[in-house]
Length: 186
Image (cartoon, rainbow, N blue to C red):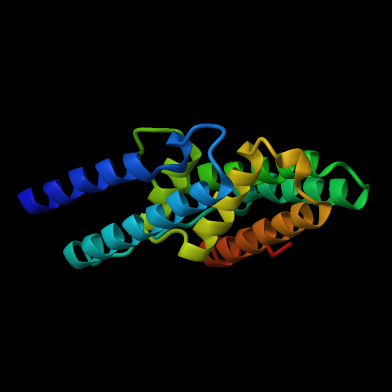
């Protein structure tokens, strides 16, 4: 148990060091991506250690109603894209859907987190195998786009692609975690 506590302490220090939110606002996109990649590696290593120490997998079951708000937010972002709204508005709507999805999953998984920061929650979900690395990356991209000073410069095509990717994550999560016999896929 002492060795696991040491690992947890080291993990927390590495997460603090490589957390993209700790970068200055004007940090380059390349530096942000580098920090995200390092954070993913740190998370994967920590996840592997936890699995070796505690091999049980967390079961997360969500009522369909809990995800309805996320579906509506994704649909709103898709409608905004079809109506020709600026990419910054589409990105804001897509990020709101991603953020709501992450908070819903975190609460449903019964996870406790010291922080309500998006990256902390999404990292926690990945460590506990609620999210895959690929899903983590999509949700991290949503955060990166939404917090970027250059979000007004993001192309409409990239904004639409982000919405599609978030919908893909939503559908995978819905398929994995909805109670059997409790709703249908949208």
